[in-house]
Length: 329
Image 1 (cartoon, helix red, strand yellow):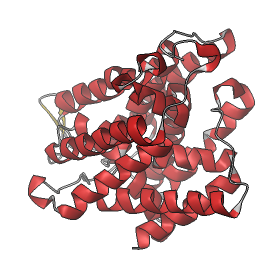
Image 2 (cartoon, rainbow, N blue to C red):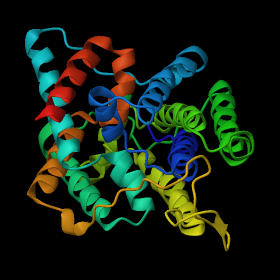
Image 3 (spheres, rainbow, N blue to C red):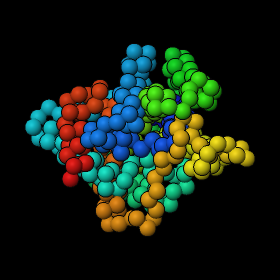
Image 4 (cartoon, rainbow, N blue to C red):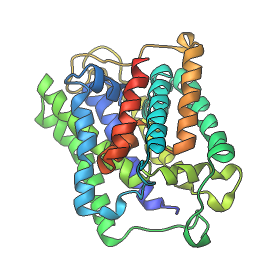
């Protein structure tokens, strides 16, 4: 169902976490590369973010379990288990070859006006749209109610979501710049917080719900199954990040000059992607296409896959095993 309040507040959390990591640590919150790095080359830059992402399950589970997605059944046969491994493999290979996913390319890349990310997003979104409508099929909403029918949060959900969004803003905008210095310990601490904020945003916005993602693609063939919620991620996630990027101009040398941030709050230098359109090759295009197919088939990308792995361990073990294999090829 259409969740305008949930998704708007969740998207603000996605914005706060991704822009916060850029401004404070000088890096991009690309979950696929962070997850791969955490598995194959763990460091203080990637492990804290993934741990924070995983730990976001705890407050949701304990305080507002109504925000947890209702996932499809976990694998219960060898055939379904191998199918999940294969999906994870394609997800891992696709995001590795396409150099990113919805977080790195769509949320962070588009907000940095990256032409390369615009091309990648266009490829995997179009592929997912066609796959969901013409291959996998899109589930209807219960009781034949149109999926664009709005539904609003309960009092407990509202209190949690407003509280989380407000606390995140105060932490990122005021507490971090004043309470932390430029050091590895500070960057590690904020990396964990960014992962926690991002995971919470995925749950609240509905991005962690694979069925909700698939219903967003339904506008192409079946308006009754269309849930427009995730369009709000553009307005409350990507556009604010773009405004922040344009106003603060991260990526220059040192200090603050003319109101433009030219040095990260907690780091000595920026570590931003340097690849350009000239670096796009057939593997990049094929990787983005493969990722789009998986996204359109299952409604899952790396960040939500991490969260689902905690709540559905059998699925997660198979999916993450396949993901790791895909990254090794």
